Figure 1 (tube, rainbow over the protein chains, first blue to last red):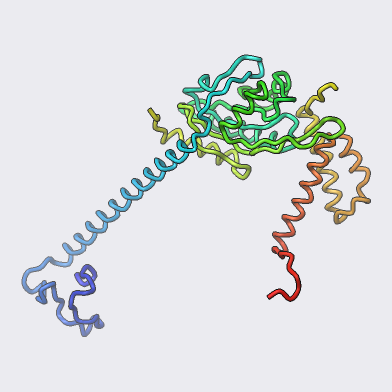
Figure 2 (cartoon, rainbow over the protein chains, first blue to last red; figure 1 turned 120 degrees about the vertical axis):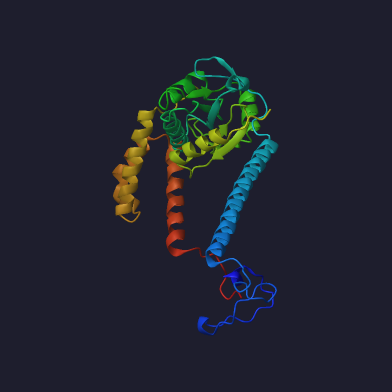
Length: 248
Length: 82
């Protein structure tokens, strides 16, 4: 039994089949059982205790590693400084909304435009389904669904109002002057580029397709692409809520 | 010129439905558009022109993606390249 615990460089005779095994030697070449070493039961217990200690140590280290990974990710996201600037936009009722208005709340944010063929409605529906999933869980803070247009030339307050009505009752849609809207998009590094106009004056806006998660301190915490499902988003938001540590 | 209002949710769904019918017809006839003219017209009438263009491009992309998945990627190479 002790053989398993000893480092290889100790000088031990090579392992032989049990029938021909030489008397077991401890570190000093003495037969441990002969001069009163630990009996088998105690040795099993010692190995088990060592194994349990190693296991506990490993679990702790793993937890530490996970904690440090999360802290590193937070630092990376903070360094990206996404969404740091303020914005001054109007919601679908024409009320002015600044970034500070959302402090203290969790926000899921999507940039899109109302003339969008398919991607924006799909992503907004997904966002709102994720919000609905989270609403069903007791004890979680409410999540504010937020839509900001990348097409301020066409998406005025009325247009945004008509658009967001179809999704979630709490979905807020923001628009404003082209300058303010561009500033808000820039703050989140949202790429937006209007395509060529056709004979009806219609055009599509090519843009970053991401759902952003903002924490109650206004900091950007995570993002979700097209491939994330509503359940995956809800689960991620829940995890962020559980591990959330206020910044200041 | 008056600003054209964005399609409502009902109009979007009507457009997507017409698109899906047209695409299903194409699937049934191995992309022979001549066999699906009526559905093509229906699709074009229910969707803004920009969306028709967008969906046509999307169809091409989806076909290309499927081809990559089934046949693998064959980079265009000149013959005899070492």
